[in-house]
Length: 271
Image (tube, rainbow, N blue to C red; front, side):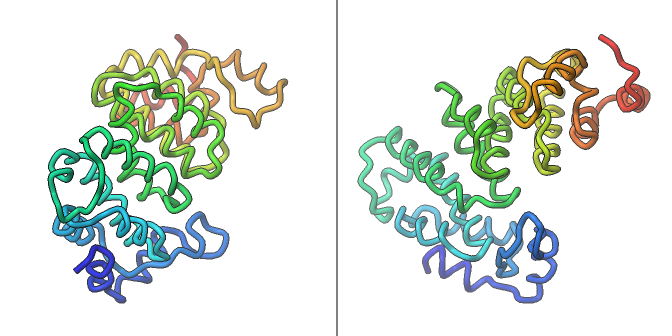
């Protein structure tokens, strides 16, 4: 069976209500209108594992355009597998693609990903795909696209891609982009961006605690475009941690000792 048909066959109606509630699909919520088959992530991963070698880009196109959340996730996870095993996939005749090299296949995966961000429309779809794809691709390349996404993304999901993609850089000990993109999103209005930025700052802090503390106690060089010049001027005089939405700060300092977390939350830390 194809990837699409395998996902349809795994549908579990008993899980639909719970997943719809978890991913906030009610009117006015961030996942409004999304549809579910009732397939949990481990099941989706097992289907992807069985199907990715024989899935071509035409099938990926079919899946990423699905009205069902889980089928779009399957498309993204399959894309990650193709990208990560490009050399093996390129030798697989059943894949029916025309790429002549591993690099061109990986490039095609990134082009596919960036041309379908309108279908990457919930936090799990972003978080399970962007850094193994876009982050990995940009390890040895110009990273300005992430800054563009964070600053000017059409949706909160594109903006989230901008920051979460830096997870790959963090894992290689490269923290500067995470801090710089966090500055772009420092005054963002949406809770899901607050959580993402705080999460990535926390991960950066696991690599270099001193660097995170320097970031939190320093002053930003970039202010969010939604701020008035008066507000931006005032904020530039304040340490970042005092400017952060509470959720972002809580996520960022989660691994700090309890006494130090309390000092940050009370605004008592000075560089």
